Length: 154
Image 1 (cartoon, rainbow, N blue to C red):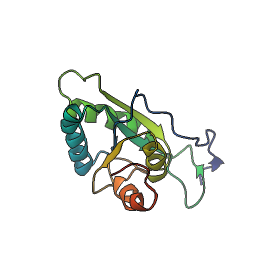
Image 2: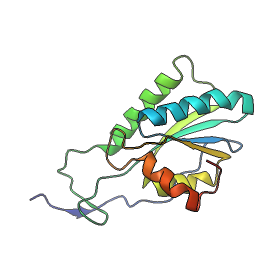
Image 3: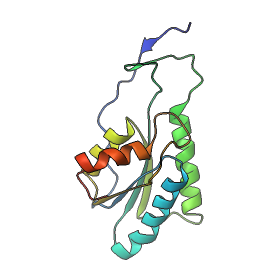
Image 4: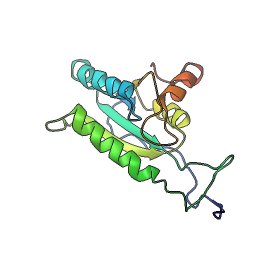
């Protein structure tokens, strides 16, 4: 049985978004509906005069309960999130990435992190169906929690 230890890097608050004015925040999990949400935001942004920031939220998988993980599990959520981010940007913006578009990965629970980041956004754009390419990231679960807690329109 693998040794279970406490997470050496506890979750903190989400990093500030890199824009000078609030814009369209896209929660991205690698699913087809998240790709459609990103395409919609990229299409709308120039006419609205708003920047777009796409975020892929990741976390370590937990074993049963709590914030414990096993270093022997073959999971690499941070690297998976970065790969999902870079592929999404390349597919959504196949040419040069415009200056009004930024993207990042952030560690945290998807719903909680998007809710916190929404305080810095004008509008939040998420897909309608989650369960993307890695553990711990699901825009569908995030979207279900949105109406009760959102700060920005969705």
